[in-house]
Image (cartoon, rainbow, N blue to C red):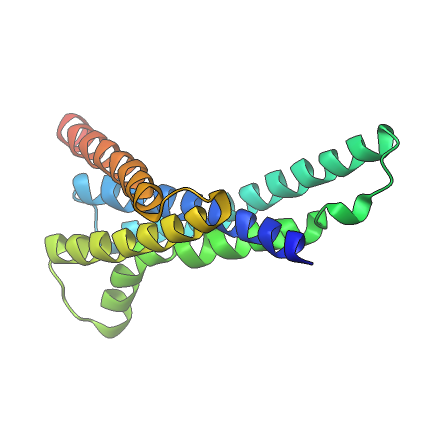
Length: 178
């Protein structure tokens, strides 16, 4: 039972980190290109659901392949592995839930007509996403038994690197193309 919880936590961290990083990169890239809130929402939500599904499929196939390999090797302890369906659901749900965080400010601005400036919305999105990275780092430290500070800093660093790259590329392309 404990192994099943740990494996699903692993899938949650995996899906959540990828959801936050990719959606954050789309948001910052679109903001860097000075795209409208509507475009940011369209790109962001398309990413959250399509990439979340893609990650779930990858998780399913990975877990299923591991199980098939165990059976092929004659290891009948299939109960040691998570269900491929459970792993894929955990990955998808975490991707969507955590991936929504960078979009949440833009969504609230759109729904409630808050009229946030583009830069204010980006700042709030960055702050919320950094908090998500911290939580993912803490969960990761629990799984890997590495120090909490190291896990949080690695999550921050990787997430921020993706955001900076995306913002710079979006900004440069906006200058070249538009």
